[in-house]
Length: 305
Image (tube, rainbow, N blue to C red):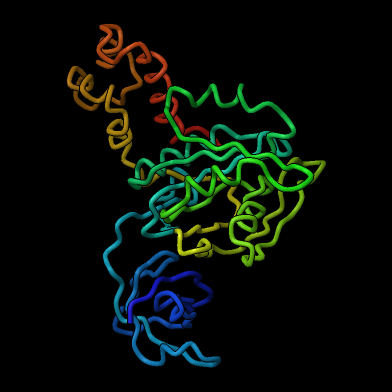
């Protein structure tokens, strides 16, 4: 029986099997023959045994399908051990508050790098636009052409939700962001029966409290896609990222790397990209695009605080 892993908790895997009115929740364990093969939220799996979903039943996961995309992070930039967060997602939704707490561009940049490395489309969602004008912050990301949605809390709801729903429609979307940015509040608005815990920001530290302790995949209403809510993060290690892959996402700049010396980091005096941009081959936005590329390349080694 095919299914999708929606949560992982201490060796037990909650899965959804079936379609439409036949869809049901099935609790499962990993079959011994899978060995130490990891299973994460978003994995497409096959189950045997009791897949009725009745209380007290337990199926076995006997096969994990090949992953289309994999979102990874490491504990820090020197840790060689990478951790798979989510499998088979289409886009990475980076949620940041514009105020209370203040946005953290370095963490956002790192999430963008992780999205590009994973082959996922990034989407920037800015919350709490009722507290400050989002335009100055968005100017930093204009050269990257990152899609964005701005939301604001109002007396009778949240502005921007319809635009966000349209951006998530038909997609499997992973939501990441540091604590207190309103990520779980958005999830509850998108999936009314999600009941994700929400918290407040500490007025002394300016940090949010972790309100989600594990990743969970939730089906959007009307079978119109999935959102995967993840715990709030304060760092996003990128030790696993091959930085040369980031350049591939700058199609206007990549041809210019042909003039780079062997082993070029694309952030040094001999880099051929400077001449490429100066020639006008990258278009009028070339200088800003090159600055943004180098900002992302530096994000791998820059602290997130």
